[in-house]
Image (cartoon, rainbow, N blue to C red; front, side, top):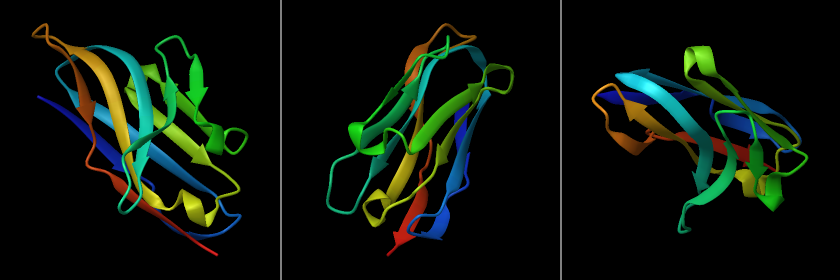
Length: 120
């Protein structure tokens, strides 16, 4: 059993900052890529940022220069620092982890989502 627990969402005015956290727990043998995705009302879920086990990062063009993804491998935790937030960043943000369990299963796991609302 693996769980991803997100925290840090909320309401902020445009130009403000938020920091999301996602901690993975359970029968985890190894963590591969981790990432953040978001889904606005009526839209598909889109990639925001990913980070590999070695620390290589990838960002959506819309967040480059404003968001920073990082991870703590010892704590199986991934973070998303979001600065200069815009109303169009409003969405439910989901944590994702590609990992292998002690039972030998490799799969993608998702968190339950955390709401981020940016007011103009």
